[in-house]
Length: 153
Image (tube, rainbow, N blue to C red; front, side, top):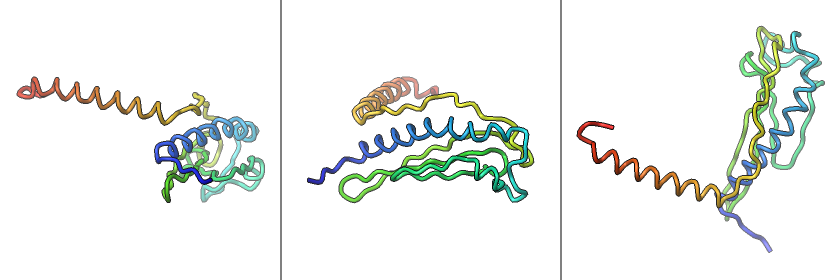
């Protein structure tokens, strides 16, 4: 039997997956890049040198796209994108850009710290509840503003 999910559940599933993958990818890529700190890693055209490309881990996962980039010569990053289908023929996408290091004239100058563990446990019910709270707060703000609308908020 085929089960269909709603759009929000698909968005939440895709977000949790892209965050989980981002959390996992960062340390692996940084480990591969650490020996290149202080060294030239990019060609004049901004693409990565072959020795760097070969050192970087390759990732494969169903429904997930991994694209390394050099951010116009300022950083080494990866765009991680995933998608989920929802009832009956819709699709949603979620993506992250994970930054690994800074570049200056093609030289990897430092490793960008990973300051966060991205959440991987969002639920559709949680999102619905927070959206409801936001609407209620916005209504209260609107009511308060209307009391002094002559003077501006």
